[in-house]
Image (cartoon, rainbow, N blue to C red; front, side, top):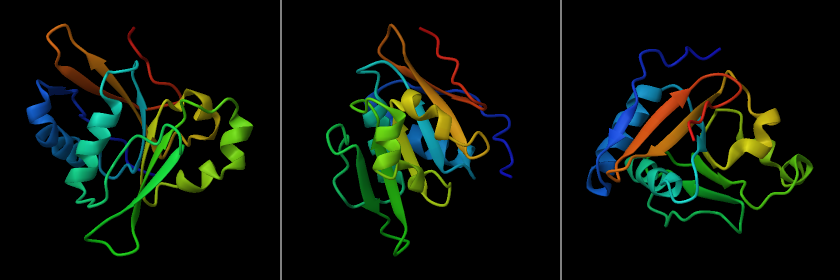
Length: 157
């Protein structure tokens, strides 16, 4: 069982210029979690933050939202054979569709997995392995990244 990420304060991202610093802090604070489900409205910065996380993990591949591909995999430069999975569930219609493309194979927590629009696949996310993350856009354009443990992310709309 993973030790819960205790004392995880929200991370404020004042601007896109500070996003890599926020991503490094996020990875330090959320260790040993490897599966992250991101909840936020369209345009709140899910993909942008995931790109920053991948830069901090030294991914040399081009990181793009897998909106149409559903799943993108990126190799870690410093760990041969290790991969990072980036999933976008926005275009999925049913849980069965997610299962039919093997999505469950990426949720074991052995490798990093970043999931956008995870609401549809909540039934297959392991509460012990998955950290739910809300990204909230503020009136000044900054973002607040907030973690939640448990079965549902308590999004504030």
